Image (cartoon, rainbow, N blue to C red):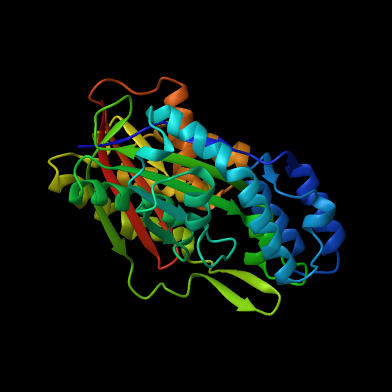
Length: 347
């Protein structure tokens, strides 16, 4: 048995609203032929506000990749420990009880991973297994949950700490004016989330089965072009159409567990954008309101990459939206294009 407990979240203090985003786009890209189409796409995302790690005046500058990565390191070390402490308290364990730590991020690079610093800083056992996941983008949240489940199956009685640290605003590129880049400028937000998976039952989702699936020949559709100036986000216009081939995969996965994907009680889905959510509802045959907590996350935080599934789960947890024995699916989507899926029940 593996239980995913209530996550903790930190949202940075600096907020950029939809109006701020549109004003910025019109000011910085006023002569760009893609501007008006991009503004329409940004407006249609439904994102009302996003939290960013720096004031917008600093976030839109580009002092160099080295400086930006230094901001990532400084802010993650400053902010992550408190989020972890809250997540540990939700699971009623301490740092000394952690057996493994899974750290995911696609917005900064550290070596050694932040996991080593956290073991030293927070007093985790020196034999804590470190599992950093750096190159799965938005899918990494689902992957972290699945790898935590696998670890507990392989190591009965263990506890796994998950940390997601996403400062997407540090990848803003003021010279990139293609439609995919402009859309991403109005879609992604920053967040830190943390959650604990324990081998004992608790007030949370009991993880029961997990699976991964990669859509063939789509590995160029979501990617980073890594240059001297850092990470340049590349998004293919075909990405929203990937829910059509993924829906039957999710259906087949649920059926291996004897469940019908369109009759589950709870859906915790990566909020990559409104069309992703709408299309998946359509192809799974579930009502639009089934993804309400994922939609709330998108509206109030934007796409916070690997942190989305944890924040959607936290919102559902706090709303008391779970029923005893309720069946749930968690699904994260990201570069590859890959889906990381988990079936669970509320305990």
